[in-house]
Amino acid sequence: MGYLLAACGPPVMGKIHDASGDWHIPLIAVALLAILMACFGACAGRDQEIHS
Image 1 (cartoon, rainbow, N blue to C red):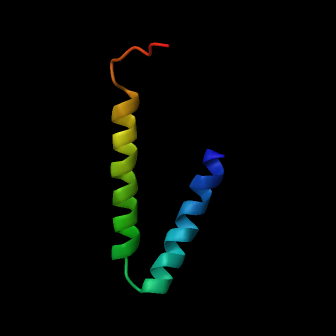
Image 2: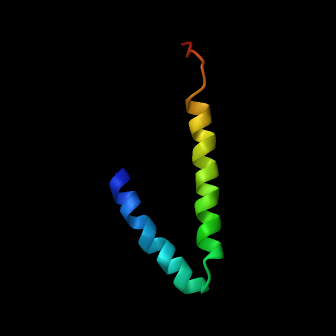
Image 3: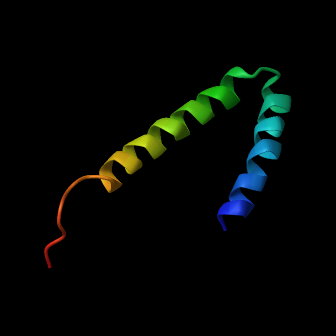
């Protein structure tokens, strides 16, 4: 599933670039996704035990 999503990224960003005529929107989208992934990674990497 991850490879499928990764393979779809460049064409989607290219289509967004073609539609807008500028690279600002695709690059902002990539930056926001990177920030979101960093937040999830920080939460996943906490030193915390799970209690049931």
